[in-house]
Length: 209
Image (tube, rainbow, N blue to C red):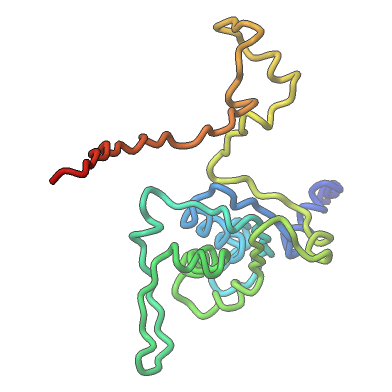
């Protein structure tokens, strides 16, 4: 007689065959590497039941697409080819121009390419939900049940630490009380210094020629 399955394993089995809604933050993440990870969850390759001809992927919600990153000068050097199969419809557009026009388009292109050259990726890409910031419809928030880990860990800013965390930092130098912390209270920019214009003194004219 087979041993009864536990409730925890039973729930995991239900989640395996169900379509989960996962959210991931795209802020300061590489567009190509993030597209590969999102495509893996859209196609269901992260599940042990995956098969090339089965559609067992999940929904993926990506927020903060406007803050997605690229390595080095890839924003200026990466070209994307578009062809609508009409006369004079072919064009190569730089990545930064596409990102300024639509902040979510770059991540959509990288995810669609990472899904592979097949016909089933058209149904996979329909489960991708991209948002330029953290605002999203209410029905999307209700369906989210999982959070994916970011590819690149993002360090916190100095202004995001609490006073208790700052007090625990090791003190290497003890500053005087009148010391100004530029990162905590920035000094107002005094502006650019303009060199005074030198003018030649005018010659005094006399009545004599």
